[in-house]
Image (tube, rainbow, N blue to C red; front, side, top):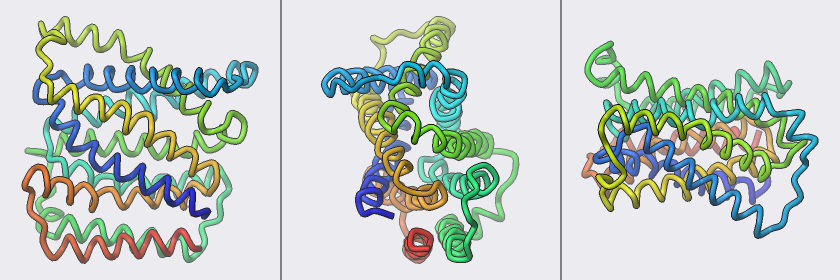
Length: 294
């Protein structure tokens, strides 16, 4: 994998790791689907401004021919993905939600083999397994044994579903990056996702009797970070890396998100770190390196 792709992925994962904390902050005074709509509107505005400044020529014929796939991608990686994740984070912890990123690399690897004809080499498979073991180590046996349909689990399941959708989004998007290019593809997906969430946010605000005036300054800062840092910059970096490498190698970098989120949660939310975290993080890093070099 090119060094530029590795750097882009690591920066994207750092931003996404912080996104779980920022989302919890935004939800303190803002309805969940409104948070999603506002972040996507900000992200879409960034993409449109970027396209205008770079004067990039739009491949209108290719966009028109791919419109239904773009709509599907805008749901898997936009409105539906962020909606499930944001609602789920109302009922689970930031670190717990991040740990469900474990499903994305596995989903990406399986779908990459089935639909992109990527080779499941021994090194890639072993790297994914090692990284998976690292994430499960961070979670701990007590948390795994206590898994049941109650308490926080409904929130966990919503976050889990959102991350599985991200796996589908990665594999479906890979086939369009060569045709449209990463910047145009991510811009089109984000604009469509923002448009689809506008009526949803309007309905949510009306049904709850809420208003944008009730959104706190801290929530606005968090939403700005989610829109500009995560939905715009991180997603763009992710697809730039995907354009340069296989989906399996790109996907395994998502295993770095749980340790990064745990560090941010420790610094911001005073969530504890222990020996399991450091051992699991070492396994995650080793698994990512093994997969990337195979």
